[in-house]
Length: 273
Length: 269
Image (cartoon, rainbow over all chains, first blue to last red; front, side, top):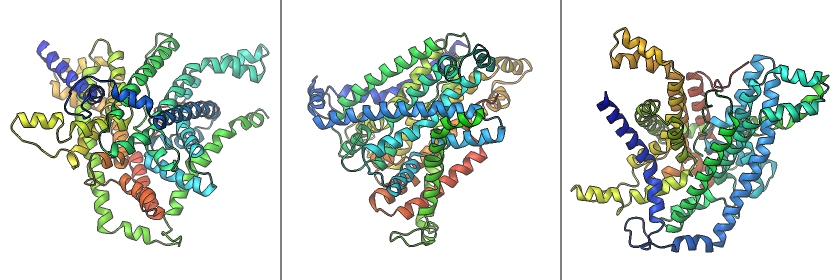
């Protein structure tokens, strides 16, 4: 039996090594003074300095963060509305239909989303650039926020609302003092998911961004197509650290939110974007 | 009367559904009937049913199948073993963490790893196989895709395994089932839902990933996604691009229906 466990652990170690090796590989060579990704010559901060001196890159990083923050905030607000709307529907068939429509963008391949949004924006006449990127990010983040909020809403006992109403709360009060506090963990989870969706998105942005405007993913893509540049490695190390911080933050909030000793909710993961 | 005043709040959400869920699909369908010059035509569909495009579609499905299969083979044992570890939450978090790292950065790492002077080639060199061209072929594309999709396959299977009642396994063993038989008759059927959603989470995106094909496979692998990107952004033939997109949407819908609908994970009260 112990032998069997040994093989099992070995396999898990192998899987984890496989998952992390490329990331660590990138980070390791970001300190390479030789300027390539195969021969480690000596330690240097050179590539990090290059990242911080690259004004274009820094503007792009700021763009990306602005888009992510704005889109996830707006998407979460519409997501709350959506979850409330779906929760209110009593007819089962209708509810299923709306839920399916909600999930279409989650399961659609990114190229389809990107291409169809490109057609949409050209037809309505929205100029490709900041606006089109922001609108698309809001649009593809809404369904995940709905999915994160809805289960909390369904968990809520309707007698809570009845009690509040009986005690004289207005409908606005019920929403702000009873419903919203109860579904807060779902709202946070939805916001985080939307935020990471936006940060990670490449394909959709690639389609709807014009010539002048770029986000980090698109920039990395165009630089990577030109071959190896260690400033990308340095940048990815920084992004990795930022991501770890985000994950830890998400985990902490989740931890604090689920104070009830119930089964941990499976953490939702989106498709690769 | 309550329903009416309240419904106004709901408007933004329903506007979103109409504008960004229904309209785009309709528009893609509409555009697929136009050629480059804007004439209404069925030519795009005729072009699609020529050997070049059909072959591309079949190979795209074949690669997606391979990627799904290999991800499943790696992920199932890993998910199973993860359910027996001690600090499960932590390990699962470590599985999720790589998915939060930009896909392009991970792909970019493989340009270095598989490169002519990269570590894999160095290893092959010391083993006496000599230098190989690892990048820009189909197997490197499959490998990198599998790498990227493994977590997306592990998580649903892990969740399904977690939900399974462990006493069922003990019962099967007590009744004399061998380890293999317990797996085939008890564990696998009970976790089928997880396997299905994992396969869906992998299969559909791998039909459409164009950045990996561009960065890793050169032009050796052309998927449906690569074709759509090519038509929309390079040759500017939106009609043909939309036609390929329509095929992809239909394929997606068929897969959804075959695997028993989507949105089921959300409970109904």
